[in-house]
Amino acid sequence: MRLAENRVLVQELYCIETLARVDTLCLDKTGTLTEGSMEVKDIIGINTNKETMVNILANLAKFSPDTNSTISAIREHCTNLTQEFIPINIVPFSSKTKWSGIYFENEGSYIIGAPEFVLGNAYQQYSTQIEEYSNDYRVIVLAKSHNNFSDKDLPNDIELLGFVLILDKIRKDASQTLKYFAIQGVDIKIISGDNPITVSKIAKQVGVKNYNHYIDMSTIETEADIKQIATKYTIFGRVTPIQKKALVLALKEAGKTVAMTGDGVNDVLALKEADCSIAMASGSDASKNVSQIGLLDSDFASMPK
Image (cartoon, rainbow, N blue to C red; front, side, top):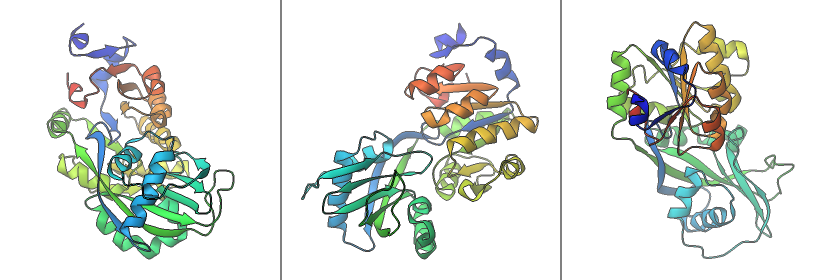
């Protein structure tokens, strides 16, 4: 009753007892530390000019079926469509591949996504620049290929066109909420699909303890490795949905009582495995259906209550 008065929906009553024993809280950055809305701060041309990039991004935003916060920010920013392309093959964003793309008639394929995933072996060539920008922004790359996608796989001959610098808006009350958990002795683990350096920077701003203990999960291959790193690190970047689940299981195996908050379809596997699962009402139906608790205001600040 008390939780209901604070706009918290309890779907499974026994989870209240589990809540009292939680010593580890897993958070996704988006929607908890940040508002979940993003804005494009700058577009940096590397192998083409900014105007060309804006037109390509405007075409991608127009024809993409995606509704995530990244493409929404690009839609809002890139409104100047100087030349409209004809889409032939559309590959939506996937939290596993971390990119989306469209093959346009007479143009080739244009891809936007996480630098490491889109550029592959060519990433090292631009890593210094990307890491420098990652200190302040989420870095998205725009790349091109003359070839079409093969069964939703990236074409081989990918060329970087430039960077899109995106900023997450940090929640005003995130610092206060995290301070409460620190006093209560609850360990915070931030599990995100974003670049670990970017996530670490935000974690520092909101006062997360051990914010500099971060790891790029795209470098981790086996479940045995995940078991070793689960308790060692605080920030987990570039995490796939399967790895989210594996991290929760590894923490439980280490004797932790784990609560997990999430709002997307990519959080469902981890939410199902957590001792206590908490969903944001503004999130996907899938995450709300599997969770024991729902925050009806979608506000992370309700957590201490």
